[in-house]
Length: 484
RNA sequence: GGCGGCAUAGCCAAGUGGUAAGGCACGGGUCUGCAAAACCUGCACCCCCAGUUCAAAUCUGGGUGCCGCCUCCA
View 1 (cartoon, rainbow, N blue to C red):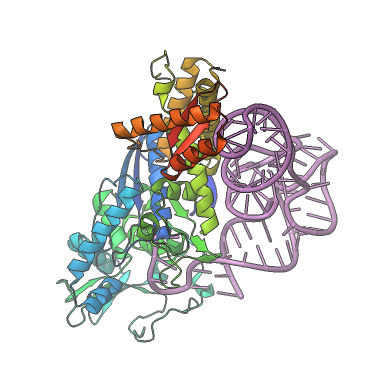
View 2: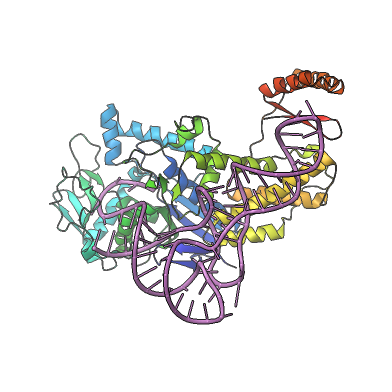
């Protein structure tokens, strides 16, 4: 059984074979740090996080690099609008990025290269392209000569003749394209405008174009060919196509063997994006500032919401979907955080996991990271565990051995970790007097029930419910309670 | 106009030849003074048409609808 991944380049699922056995190099396009990240970014990050975790689970040593684009028009515009500096904007939003992403339990990449740290490497690449005749300079700008590269379009399946210039309707009229020899060419180096940050270069003061950064950083950090290149589906063209053009023309080797792309988050079927204005930031969701659902959303709920869809498919974001994920997470969390102290289990935590569950999970995930199918395994484990737990707790019965129980729980925990789903230990340190107070109320209520003073009994139930304590009357006459 | 993707229950979503995972929601039941919890239980002929096959949600052809990209994008 081997891992199979869908490769955008070939448009097929292929067996995954890394260049160096046991090792995987992986690069995913990160964000341009000009604003807070929204749910679309979260989806991408969670997706690649799970890919990485799964590869590690499968025993691969993964070297994972994700870039920050820290020089860009949007950053400059923001700085200008705020009367601030590019550096200040970059610092702020990188900090914000880490804050958001770590809350979502996304593991840090091994490296976070920034464009501005790679200016010499970028110069080198552009010069090499120039020498080979794939780039030309005009008045301080340098362009890539797309028609020189025979393979252009192989990733996105395009033919130059069939592309409609400006079909996206976003060509900026203020930025005349006339300097280019051909409308399909793209910029490698932009000459400096007055008052903007600029670097010395063989072509004069300027700054890098968008696509060249990834070619340069991949080469600098991971080498000429990497195993996996990931990114949002909206980057296939032109960004990734251009990366290929820049890199492969120089090395004669594939830039990446596997190109993976995640589907978009949509809102009412429409892509979530900054420009459409239909975005919701991660921060707003976590902090309870999403207008449609003004309560803090557990980061795990967001993970679950994302992982319930296959990563390549569109994922529609709506209040109802989040609410459903919240309930789903409650189910998983209940089992992940079972209070074993109530059970007096005899067996220690086993090292072996439940083979059948692991097998089903792995089969699902080996099939192009089918997290939705993988989650089914988690839910089935979680529900079975909860059932057994309740059986033991409330009815003093058991249907499986302590070892089986522990094994299931351990399996659930470990598999959930592959998805980054972890139940944080609830800090339910109930103050001592609290417990005493509750116990005394319980006694009063017990008394009332025996005397059939049900009004009083219900009053006490409601009083406790109001402070978040739920009472459960058991068949044996005892009453349990727990916080909600 | 070009390229790519998607269409499965009220909603989300797996399943790529043998007769539909899972989640959410909902209904019924047991238990209970009531309630909650718990437990048991019910809930789809897979967009349309034609074809291939003993057998198709699953393959082929043709429709229809929706989405992404065609130089801002995760």
